[in-house]
Image (cartoon, rainbow, N blue to C red; front, side, top):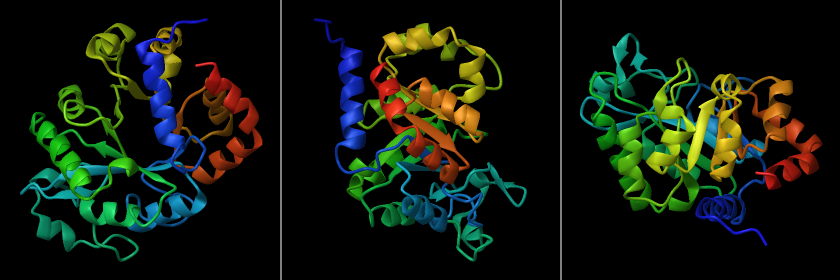
Length: 274
């Protein structure tokens, strides 16, 4: 009988927490919600609602601090040419999204998420442009709000600033996936450093995984939870499903849901091979 390693046990716990409580049983994570084929603004409440309606396992959103540390949902670092983190909350709220919504607060977004029990919220904690350590403060504030609102079971995290991940893992047992730095090779992303840091979840860009296929056997031995972004082409969807990736983040959730449905048995076998 094979010995069960700590990492293998952790991967099993993650799997059960992801799929054992009624969450949609697929690897589909809607990138910034369902927006590309719906006409919704990215990161809007409507984009989450449609991702949930489609049956996605998760819907990703991006969280920034405003100037006075309010938490808002928006992808880009700037809105109308001004950094989100340097703009007053009231000014941001006065600027409507294309569907007439105001820029959502994290509290409003979580309130919407809690109305259903099938689709998780994957929170991307945006790294501060001007003050990287402020990212740590943001990560802890996000987790405090998640716990205060009773949304623990609905949420998972993404972090690009490694110290924020370290601090976040010290206060929560929720999955905290490291995003890496895909535009350039970085020693932080290697299997050796991931093992050293005790990171158990990865969410690298598809180009980074493909640039370093030699990393995959090492990551698999470590029993990591694998996420990948952003995968929009059907051949790449199949590739990462066949590699047994737990989550696949996409701007095309409708297409990925169809691909998963058509290849569900093969995908489950690939998962078991991790």
